[in-house]
Length: 195
Image (cartoon, rainbow, N blue to C red; front, side, top):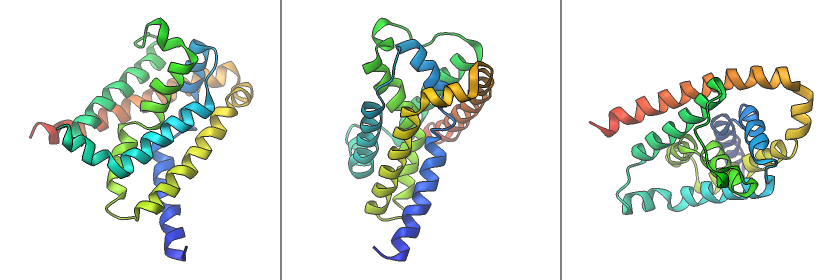
C-alpha cells in the first residue's frame, strides 16, 4: 500500500464519516434504545457494513437490473429520514408496531438502514467510485463501521455524560438537521428524477 492509497483511504473515510454522522445520530440511537430496551451493536454494525460493501460492489448493477434509479432510492431514503426527524422534534410516533420495538428489528431497521447505511451513504459510495479505487473505499467503509460499533457500544456512557437535558437539546437540534438533510436529499434527487 503506497502513499496515494493511504491518502485515498483517508479522504474516503472522512467523506463517509461526515455522511454517516454516527456522532450526530446519538439522539436517535438513544431514542431507539428507549423504545426497544437495547440495541445490538454488533448486529447493527455488521448489517450496515454488509449493506455498504454490497452496494459498493453490486449496488448500481442490482438497482439498474430492477429498474430502480439511484435517485428514486435517494428520494425514498429522504422520506424515511424526514419521518425520523419529525419524530425527534415533534414527539410523534411514525414507526409503530410491536416488531419495530424488538431490539433485533430496531438494530436492523431503522438503525443499520437507513440511519447508518442510508440513501445518502449509498449515493456517496457510488460517487466515490468515480474518484477512488474500490479497495480503498472498502477499507474506508470498514474503518467507519469500527467507529460506528464503538459509538453504539458506548451509548450508555455518552447518554450518562450528556444527561437528560443534553440529550433533549441534541435531539431537537439533530432533528432539525435531519429534516434539512431529508429536504435537500429529496430536492436534489426528485427534480432529477422527474425531469
